[in-house]
Image (cartoon, rainbow, N blue to C red; front, side, top):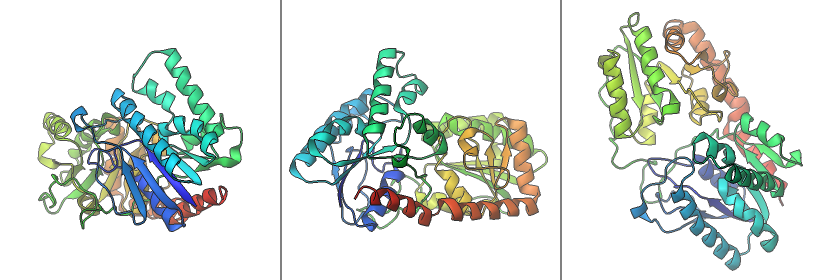
Length: 393
């Protein structure tokens, strides 16, 4: 089987690394699929043996692509369309695997080129227009809603990445047998094509920041966008710090501006002396910080999609404290993590419990690892993708 994968997004940059595209492509190759991958010019090529990465022009003077809908994305998608059309005119593909908005033009190309179409749906794009306050136009919203609904039903297979999105698709799709829930639950190291190491920001420090000895480390690793709840985490740490003078908070990730903002908050809360913000680091170095953790945290305050890092936290064997919101509770519960309301006193109390109730902490961590092995491991992921591909042959 020969497949064209279309990923309209920056492909492996410090600001955003589409791991789902990488892993789906990697495993498809392992299952015998020949792959060409069309993506944005922004980013660095990764080591995917047998995969051709076909980039549109970089257009660096237009700046970097940001999360959410934008005119820049619309402009770049115009070139993704033409590159896709050229590939279809000059090659024969059995399958087109379209991520996100790429499906909107692929569903119209499908009857012309007679390929099987997979819609890899990471979010509802009409909902994104609303969530990011991109437009108030009901006409634009209805147009995107029609495009999305028609694409779901025109596709030969639809992939969703979390139960919330799966529930949404279930209300739209006419043939539920072609709908597959495949969580973004694997996190193997990613190798750059032009470097021996793992994916990294070359400007990031590659050694651990010196940390004090004899402390209980609470570690967060991820982006520092507002919905991740870093402000909540720092305020919660303040609430539990008076009774835990050996606790130390490590926050890994973030742009320089975000890091400076949260350092200022830590100073205002009086915990700057027990808080380290590293800024953005390589994937490998982030894993080193995680390995030092006595407690991991996911303090997210908004959203419905399950964070990718939750699966790595489940598999880590390290106790986890997470906010009791739907974004988490699709996967987590009180049997595998310390769950707390997204407010400082409650979350601070959960941090205190995770540090001091070692018996419970270890029991939850063991349960979490068992859950990952049973439902979200690489074996499970490969099995789901194999079933999808088998249905398209």
